[in-house]
Image 1 (spheres, rainbow, N blue to C red):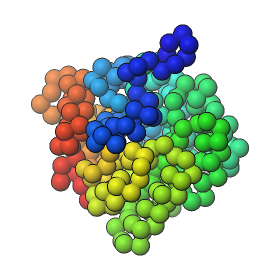
Image 2 (tube, protein in one colour):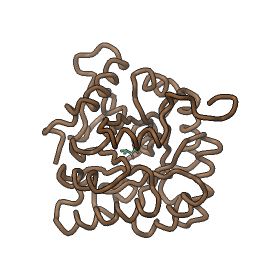
Image 3 (cartoon, protein in one colour):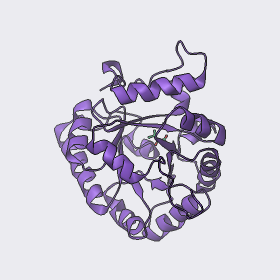
Image 4 (tube, rainbow, N blue to C red):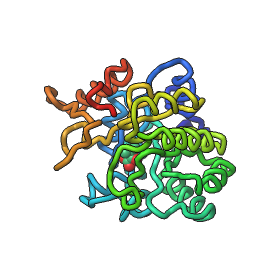
Length: 272
Ligand code: KIV
């Protein structure tokens, strides 16, 4: 930021992301949880950094993201925003921190004021439209998240592909349009058939970020530790280890960015 608090030209803003969608330029997104990786991702050309509550799995060693707290998210968000300047940084509102509009505002304010995030993400369903409107009405940019929403893993009965049936796919598209009408600026869609990823990306004016959602989304996101082969145990089939054949993490991240920009990632083997 300059002395006058304006975004420096070259910094990634929501306007810039909207233009990238209009002009057909793919957007590269990765998660990060600390300053060192945030700086490395910036050097390698990543456009957007997500401080995901996936930190519960990959940093804290938990089985799900459910135990992650708002204090955890503020701590890691502040570390990330200290480490980079150019990428847009968005931070997850963790489980049960956005059940009411007021609670959502209080917790989003912490992520932005203490964590210095540029926007917040929530795994919103129809019940959260009021929370989205409250955020938007208070000038807080919002990213929605549909499809597989890991905070609801116990309700969903496991980590499964969502929206395979026609009715469920139509409902998800409807929800995406409702959230766009409520004012979200970005939408993550996770673990859905490629065809549904294409329908949602085509129908929405805002950029749609896919993870396991096929090659037609406007942006691709992966959990950083999956794409550099650090994750222990199961790695999702939609992910790819970009460290294969690379000596340096920064080269692996550069390869991810260029594979997203050229459309060569995700390949058929990463799609449903
Ligand atoms: O928490 C996270 O890392 C996420 C991505 C999987 C989209 O929400």
